[in-house]
Length: 167
Image (cartoon, rainbow, N blue to C red; front, side, top):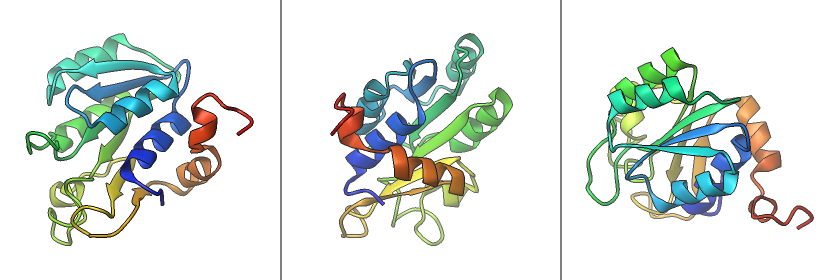
């Protein structure tokens, strides 16, 4: 759990990626994802909105120690949906991890309201969602493996990631 969706995206991306890694980000991703990419100090490659073919080419030409594809599931400004099935298949083929921000899908999409991944049967490596929109609460969550959860618990420290290592 995080105290906000912003803190979740910044904390997750900056904890998992750093110099030598590559983050691939949809051109219309939320500002919190963009800030997470910047704070991670990883190479950030922005792909055209919802363009899986362009992303495939970028994945071919951008090696890295770790590679993470990040997308909103439902884009906040336009309301359109990410091609999650295609992104999942591409990430598996390319050996990249997939992170999906379900902030605008949690509580309203999927049989139980778990989001677009649930509706489409997509298994992302990381799923983030907020408790503050459709659920009317406070905070954000991340669904991931036990190993990633432990890493996030110890490394998703916003003050340290903002360049204050002793904070």
